[in-house]
Image (cartoon, rainbow over all chains, first blue to last red; front, top):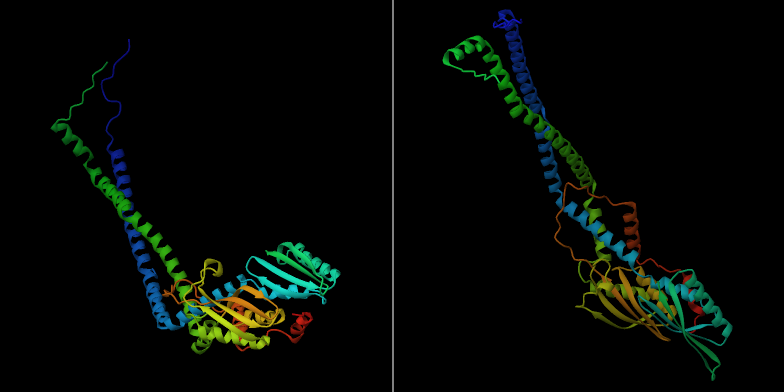
Length: 177
Length: 236
C-alpha cells in the first residue's frame, strides 16, 4: 500500500533566499552603473564632436568664396563658352576639307563647272576633252566612296558630249555620310 | 479531474509581500534600467552614428570648398577677363553683326576673293538642323567673286574665324560662289553657382582651344601658299 505525503517536499531556506537577493542587488547595481557610464560616454562623445566647428568652418569658406563671386561667375562662363565652342567645331561639317578632297582628286585636264553642296549631298558638273581623265576622276570619287571618306553613295546623273568644242560633260551626285 | 483553486485573500498577499519585499527594489531598478536603456541610450547611440556620417559629409564638403577657394584665389582677374573676351568673341553673347562682317571680310581678304552681295536673316533663329545642341544661330548668305579655288580658300578662312560659324550650303559656279553660313551665339542665362560641386580649372584641351581661337582672332594665315596654289589647275 502506497503512502501519501501531504507535507511540502521543499522547505523554505532563508540562506538561499538571501543569496538570490544578493544576486539581484548586484545585477541592479551593475546595470545602474553601466547606465550611468554609457550616458556619460555618450555625453562626452557628443561634446567632443567636431560637427559644430566643421559647420562653422564650412560657413566661413562659403563666405570667402562668396566674396569672389565675380571670379567664379567668369570661370563658369568661360567653361560654358569653351564647351559650346568645342561642340560646334566638332559637330560642324567641314566643307572646306570636302572641297579640298574633291579638288585634289580632280585630274589636271578636268575642269569643275559647277559645284553645289549642302548637308546631305554634293552635285558636281565637270568637263574635259579627255574621256580617260573623266574616267580617272570617276575612279577617284568611287575610291572616296569605298573608303567611306565622305560619300555613302555616288550616282552618275549624266554624261554628254558637246560636239562644237569636243568636250565631255559629266554630272554626278554624291550622298554625304 | 482535480479542481485546483487558488484563492488570494488578504492574508496570503501579506504573507507573500513579507516574504518577497526585499526583491522589489532591485527588480524595480533593473526594470527602470532596461526602460532607460531602450528609450534613451539606444536612440542616442543611433544619433551618434548619424552624427558621424554628417561629420564625414561635412568634411568632404569642406575639402571641395577649400579646393574651390584655392582655385579662385589662384585665378588672376585680368587673365580671366582676357580669356572671357576671347571666348565671347568666338561665341558671342548676342548676335554680333559687326563681328560677323569682320569675319567674312577677313576670310575674303585672306582668300583673295571679292565679296559681292550678302544678306542677313536677322530675326530668324536657326532651325533644328542648323543648331548644334540648341546653340542659337543666325544665317548669312554671301556671294563671293571667284570660282572653286576662291571658294575653297574662303571656306578655309571662314572655318577658322570668330565668331564661329557653320557653312550650310555652297553653290559654286564659273565666276561666283554663294555660301550660306550660320553664325552661332549664346545668351548668358541666369547663373546659379553651386559652391559644393568642384570648380574646374582650365584644362590642357581648353587651353589649346583658347590658343586656337586666339590664333584665329590674330588672323594668322590658316592656309599655306602651297595649298592655295594647288587649286590653280582648275579652269573656271
